[in-house]
Image (tube, rainbow, N blue to C red):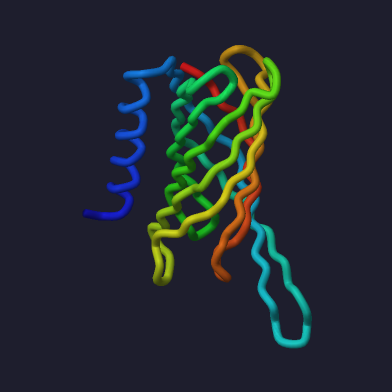
Length: 160
């Protein structure tokens, strides 16, 4: 089975399992992605390049207990020549009525990467609820492998 189908099935399984037991919200999100490449070039030091892209996707928000939620997402990211799926699974904590912190792993499937198409990264995010349906969010993604870049995501989410 193709890896991106596995990621999609995992997202559907998580959504289905939690929606049976908890209050669930579904939504869409999108925004800009800034990716930071850090490549050492001989004796010239670090050459840091930033590339801008876009992302769009869906999310589910499952209330676990009190202010804790589980929020899986499935995002399509276009970044220059690279196109990939990003599937983060966040533990979300409501600091107050308007401000949330999100932390968790994300699985990435690259459609057109050189060798390893699956990569695991760590995400740290914040969301500010502008209204009960609309949020402004930011997340920072850290790549664990040498060739995996770090990224900053800025966007909007809308609960359906």
